[in-house]
Amino acid sequence: MLKQVLEFIKGKDLTHLWEQFAIEKNGVVASTSGDLYVEYPCSNFTYKIANYTHYIVSGGKSYKRKYMIGIVEFFLPTPLEICITKEDIFTRIGKYFKNKEIVVGNNAFDNKFYLKSNKELKAISILKDKILIEKMISMNPTRIEITNKDGLFGEIPSKDKHMLYYAKQERFENINQLYQIDLLLTAFVKNLKENCSIQ
Figure 1 (cartoon, rainbow, N blue to C red):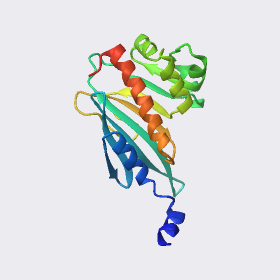
Figure 2 (cartoon, rainbow, N blue to C red; figure 1 turned 90 degrees about the vertical axis):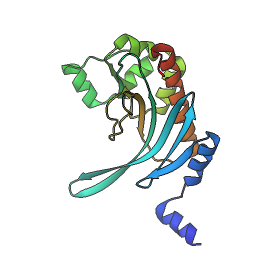
Figure 3 (tube, rainbow, N blue to C red; figure 1 turned 60 degrees about the vertical axis):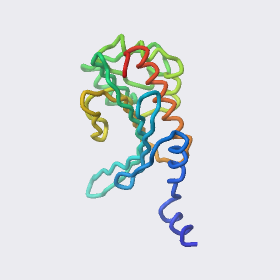
């Protein structure tokens, strides 16, 4: 009875789903400040999928937003930066004044996302993969990037490494979200191995 009352007040405890996913992926579940994450091996890389609570203070009030994060670190022979964000009023204004937009050639993707990169042709070649593009469109992430700098919430790759970084403002509700992030990261890693020889 007490457990049911606590679930009603706090929300259902979904830790068992993270643990189930970790077992299936031969990974481990851990927690940072109450947010769960799982790390697991995949194709000679280590994947990390995390729940992240972002606190915002505005007008003297505190708000929290939930995010799902996915990270894969790797060595990249040639420096490459890619940043994909949702198309919004700010990106439209930025494009109008100074920032050149890279067009992939897929109307659904180009209308939904804003893409910038230090290697335009390389970014386009990576994003020509139909499975990868369709996965991104269907998942509608807040941000996907390849960087050797900070992630959206200060995540930093290990020394001399880049990271593939996925973030979506989304509350964790079911194990399918973990599988979908895993599939997207795997499709991206496959393309990076083919186009950039990541290790």
